[in-house]
Length: 117
Length: 110
Image (cartoon, rainbow over all chains, first blue to last red; front, side):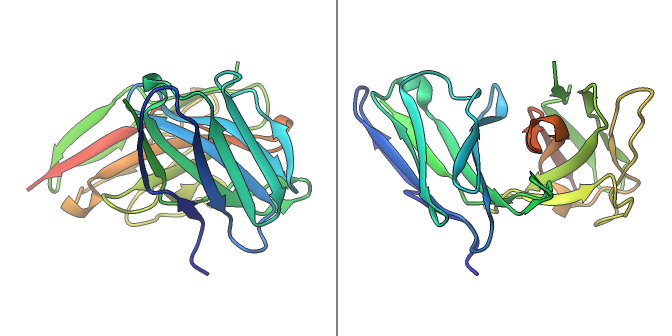
């Protein structure tokens, strides 16, 4: 298994543009997480899904951010419109549910580095 | 509120010196804690979890519920230990989601 796959690896865009980040979790994993990494705040959980259903999106900064998981093998994180303060590395991670909750070991993708000018 | 705190952004030590990366947590439930590590140009990965009580790459971490701490320790640091280290807390009462501290960058100098 190639692990969690994220695309694009790097994205440079201008303020106001729409950004879509993509994630393919590890096959068989049924829990998926989106994190944002910045120097100031470290790793922040944005949203996570169990069995393709959003469980907790309390970390999503504002309405400009949205995430979907249409099936077990694909998720997107969209920012519309993007702003310079959204510049960060966005990580996707997947995990296996056990007894209704994830086991705690997350497998991370390589991240998508977003720069909004 | 649930929270993980890593007070040091950067920790710099010489090779062979002991190292301790601090982690404190705030959680009303039964805590389950982890250390994740991100080496240069590699993915973030699990280093160890408190329930395993094992030593990985010479690192150990003991959960101290009285002090609400889960510090990561190694008696003799190696240059290859240089990396970003994140402490994480699993929230059982919120579907098992994992929250992370701000991270500590460990730099081991020759």
